[in-house]
Length: 166
Image (cartoon, rainbow, N blue to C red; front, side, top):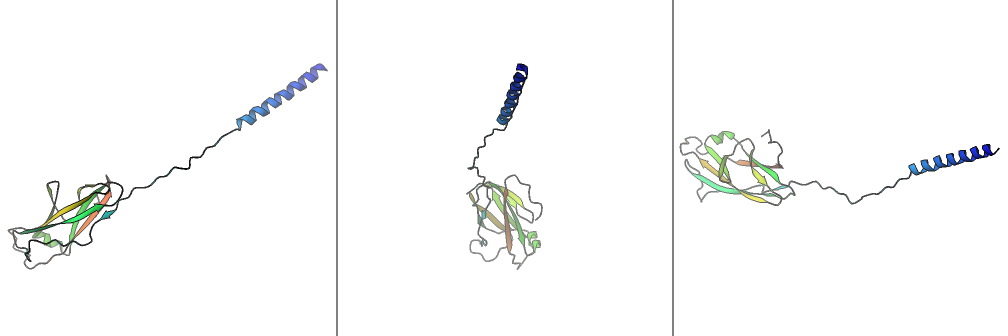
């Protein structure tokens, strides 16, 4: 009989051991970090909607003459962007006798119907982009032509692909 009691006690201890071991396996602890926040950066181009560029008082542009001015452009965003510019007009045919250029870091760029990159503009930075209109000294066409040019300025995320559509 002692053997039966001993086996019963051994069985009870074995079951109790397994029950307590499996209970420990389910213990867990969870912590929460609630102060994580992400904020997306912004690109915000600020420039006047209209800018009149005039010469030195001459009302008309003649072959060999040029007039200049500038366009103020500012990145009011929080990240650096690539700055592009293109030119459009009522009649792009006028670019056969008018030339519109800008200079960036000493390099001249002819403006036309395709976007060209003119540099980067950091957050809060601005540039006074020089613009020059000129008429080729050998130009014989365009007499009496009045042309209204529109500058499309684009600020894109730095390193993004060059825009493919004018």
